[in-house]
Length: 488
Ligand code: TXE
Image (cartoon, rainbow, N blue to C red; front, side, top):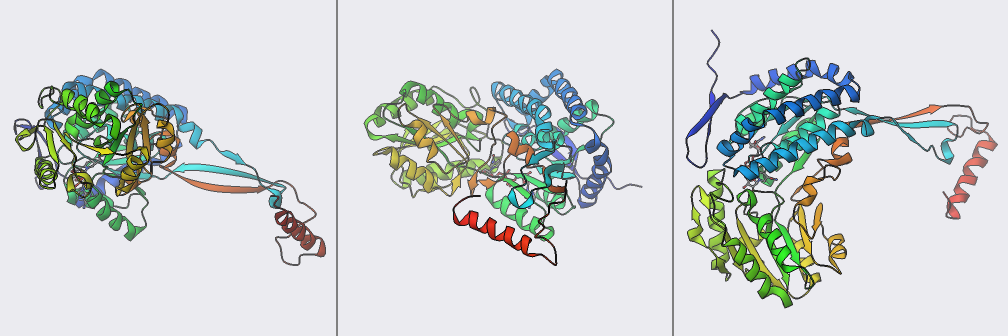
């Protein structure tokens, strides 16, 4: 008799009511899943990009047709407001379409100039899928974030084993189920469920690449485990993104964008706004505009619940720290924390050393601080160990400021807009991780490259051989002289 699988219960964070359950995967089940997709991977990789695109387009159509199910799951399992669920799903389909349509640009062999030393050779770069990609996902955007890896990995011909967050397993299962419906001949996307131990089992199961989204702490553990087998990793970690407001910004528009950027999805957005730096002259007016907009919003109405119960303690701790360190609450405060909801909180004049400024809060909390000029805003933004995204509001110098920021993405006169442009890579630097999802770099991320040189004709000069003659050495001397003169 087969042992009864351990079940993983998914609960609604708003009500704590069960939404459903899935079988949890132990390390044997994870290994079986990896073996299964590995067996199916070659046939998927052997399809040309047009055929893979047709399959992925069919998946997209089926997902769009069954969208009501996913939106309900996002609301029930991740506690999302309906509008946030709809936005997330639209973004996912947008990225899937782009990845499927553009994979051929990355996979097509690329001719490279051979250079003066290798005249007579044809040089070509070819890219191939890794094979099996493990994707470990978070709960805050349980479809959008992992699909940044899943869609791009599948489009480039990989098979994928996906471990969704233990808080959003049904959403992950839905993705695998709709894929199986759309692409029954190629079982190259499967889901394994469970918590950290299942994620660790996936890392150890011999995948060819691992894409991780989550906290920096867990990212470190995943990377250490991957080091054992030299498995390449992609790390999408947290952020402490700032919005910078220059004196010539359209303040009303900036306030609208910042409040949305900080509070949407209950502030549980890796590239959401957590810090705001406003240039002195317009600080008071900007703070008033932000406060005015934030205090009109209510958790549970315009945005949803905090999906992970433990996060509520982090949010409360950061509010306490900001106030204890000398900051002031302009909207809300500790009383805004009413689990599973957190109403908007706007804090002002919080010292930069405070935990509320240094660490990722991941809640609907904005810290609004005054700076003397744009340079100080840039310096403070860049002083964070995180460097994911940022926003700059202004006219004359906004683009200049954007180019001085250390993060991987900047929105000028908007927030998180880069995440909706499939052609732009998404990812961070420093403690926010490395590697990129989305865009051409996001497709390349799931391929490995091989460089090929092919001799087309034999030159009289052949310095790469034993028994070189005077002519060969003369040719090398001439090349050296060209470098002395600064030529190539
Ligand atoms: O993330 P974890 P959590 C940040 C945010 C949040 C914090 C904690 O600050 O407060 O992370 O969230 C799996 N080997 N972000 O607890 O623990 C785990 O099961 C392999 C930012 O959800 O990092 C889940 O599937 N896998 C981020 C995934 O890792 C392991 C989004 C993430 O879990 C594992 C989410 C292990 N040893 C949280 N341990 C963003 N960039 O958006 C856990 N996991």
